[in-house]
Length: 69
Image 1 (cartoon, one colour):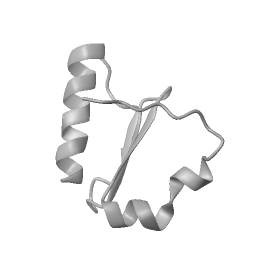
Image 2: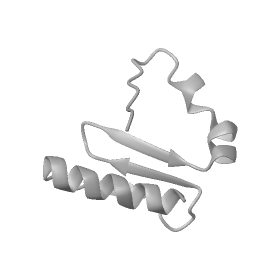
Image 3: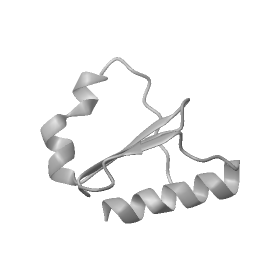
Image 4: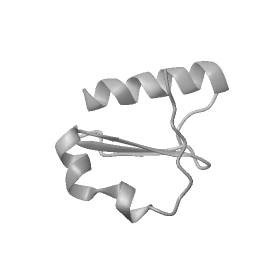
């Protein structure tokens, strides 16, 4: 599922913004993929990996932007 979500993000960003990620890391493990678009970084996790790393706590003081589809 993680790789499918990453592919979908790439497709939508490419189509809507004509942009490609500067770097993508983690495609090979399918648990956590980081997509770096320079100004925006997307993390796509499996639920257990997200719970383990708990990035929300690490970045607790950051502005949260919810993106609904």
